[in-house]
Length: 180
Image (cartoon, rainbow, N blue to C red; front, side):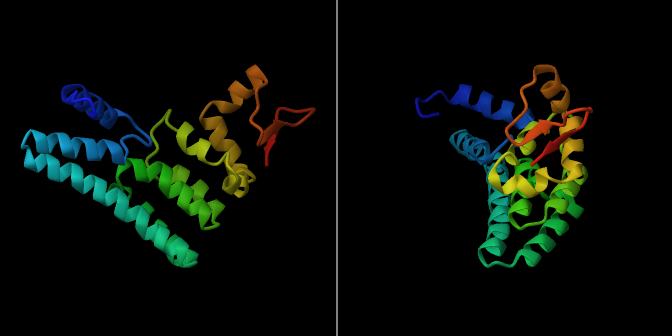
């Protein structure tokens, strides 16, 4: 948008709305809101701004719990959100909710969320990738994490190529593997 290519910007932003997982993100909603304002489509501008605000407000609410050290309160809020995934915008639902839950030291709930929130088929990569970091260690060590890697097709890829991530390795003498 910086160079005045508004038509192309709208096409890209609308295309990202069709993507799953952590797209569309806040930048998409902000761009669409701006483009809708330029076109004086006030209802669409407000709707895009509302999506941006909802994403930001929910993330900030959980960050407030984390900052205060009130992990139990934060985890109660996560459970409330997960009970009705329709209240969460798509980018928050899959990625941020999982990461913030991991930061609040509940790896079992992270795995439960992988299965209960709406992560469409074939879009597990972005949420899985989040747990390759240091804060994902406890999540990676749970047996259920291995199931998620298998569901995403990554284990087949690792075995076929021999390219295992630094956080997982095959076990000698059988078809099993471990993550750490």
